[in-house]
Image (cartoon, helix red, strand yellow):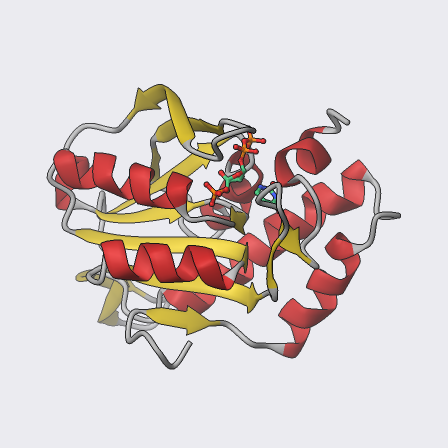
Length: 212
Ligand code: PRP
Ligand code: URA
C-alpha cells in the first residue's frame, strides 16, 4: 500500500491462484487448511529477505568452507488464536527451529473489540525477530492488541503477516505501529456491517477447524 512505508502487499501469481481457491465457499476443510499453510510459507519466504544470519564452518567432501545460515534462536512465531494456528506449520517448514508463542484473542461479535483469553510467549522473546500471524486483518483490533502485548514484553523487531486484509485494518495497524512491517497477500475492498471482509473468505477460524 503506497500510503504507508511499512505495508507490503505480496502480489504474486501463485499467491493469487491459491487465494482464489480458499475464497470459494465450495472449498472443503482439508484443502482450505492445506492452502492456508502454503500461503503462510510463501508469505514467510517473501517477507524474510533480511533474516538474522551467522557464519558457520562447513566441510564439503572436497574442502572446508564458511557458509551463512539463519542465526540460532533468532526467530519467534506468534499466531493469534485460533485462526493464526493454521499458518504455523507453513512457517515452521521454512524456520523449523523457531520458537512459537500463542496469543488468544476473540472478537466480541457485537462490539468487534478483541478479548484476550490466553497468552504464553517463549523466554527471551524480546531478543528475537517476532512474526505475528493471523489469516485475517479486518478492523485491526486483534492485530493492534497482540502487537501491544509483545511490545509490553519488550519486543522491538516485529513483523505482522496476514493473508487477507481490509483497508480499515491496514490503516489501524499501520498507524498504531509504524515500526512494524506489515505483509498481506491481498487488500480486499471493505468490511461489512458485521466486521467481515468483502469479498474475503468468511470466518477463517471456522473454515480451518471445520466448526461451522
Ligand atoms: C478473526 C481473525 C482475527 C480477527 C480479525 O478471529 O482470525 O483474529 O478475527 O478481526 P479484527 O481485525 O476485526 O480484530 P476471531 O475473533 O473470529 O477468532 P477465531 O480465530 O477464534 O475464529
Ligand atoms: N475474521 C474472519 O475470520 N473473517 C473476516 O472476514 C473478518 C474477521
